[in-house]
Length: 177
Image (cartoon, rainbow, N blue to C red):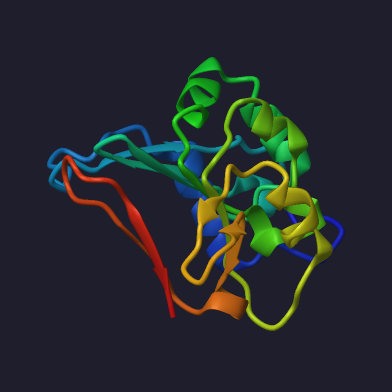
């Protein structure tokens, strides 16, 4: 897995073992009151790096879709895009959390052939990458922002905690701070 960066840790070895052997669904899955969760991932050994083995998670609720891609990089995105069911659900993305903290390695323009989110959200700390504003902002629809203007990208570094609120039958609302 980490062929170029040293040996596989015990934790990663255990995760890979579970990934290869797990064949049962959860007998009593939790009820999230209308929230639908769908996950996708690339397979090992097709990919041998931890980033491209990230669990990509879609949350859907009352017409709102949020995509959490983990640290998937471009090659991982391209592999996922080969799956028709992935492309279909991608079309329902309202908000996209930028892969790999908005780094260039997690950016894949082809993803946006299937979705145009209202906002791209970057979860990051002190480091800022050019892709966070330059690349992602041109793919988002944008939302009118308090105090005027339109925002296309929000980041936890700049905006603090980002909250998306959605009640059944009502429109969504994004707040920061």
